[in-house]
Image (cartoon, rainbow, N blue to C red; front, side):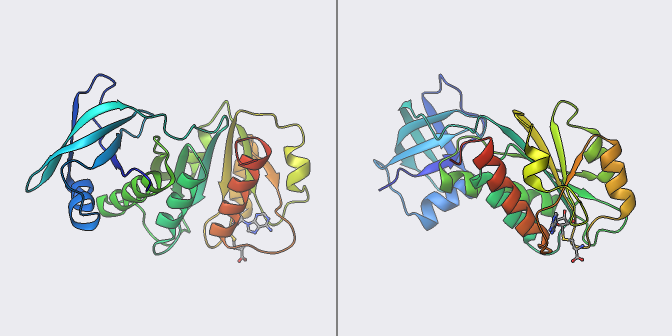
Length: 241
Ligand code: SAH
């Protein structure tokens, strides 16, 4: 049975013990019903993962005695940032979950004047953070992707040393052509919101150094386009191959 992994942000390489509390403790006690003596791993979301044995389970936390260091799943050699237009409902959580599983380093949600839902507000950002933790626990990754929410102009003005790509259904250039000479180690890929990009949005991105590429003749939902491009980029340049 796969060793159970828990997110504990403040562990260090030299930690002799770790405290599992909050939502992670609820998962350990109520869902997994682990007991003292069971093995457990703890990871800090920044690449450190330690193995241990549950020493005690209290009312609202569990103590783990650290017994060693775990390798944890290796990170992809390519750093991919997904810049995703705001989406309705729980689609943002879906995007964060799949991006975490696919080894993405950052998900930057952006709002434009025309995007529907507001992603700001502690509740939503907290839920997005939780989605990343749950996905990292499940897929074995000791690194959490960075998840942030900003506006369009701010999103496209960053990533200066990245290979930049905007996916647009109106583009003449196909993806294979657009990636032909990209041996980049850092890629920022821009996917539109539910309603798609305005011509100005595309032009702004182009002026900011984004290459425009098409994903073929069919119009994909934003979440389909995002999953497709992340998988293609990890296959072509990363570790999905
Ligand atoms: N304009 C679409 C809605 C946008 S789809 C419509 O009329 O329904 C959401 C986003 O997915 C787009 O902004 C684009 O970034 C991406 N996308 C969808 N289909 C695409 C395609 N065939 N080529 C490139 N990007 C695509």
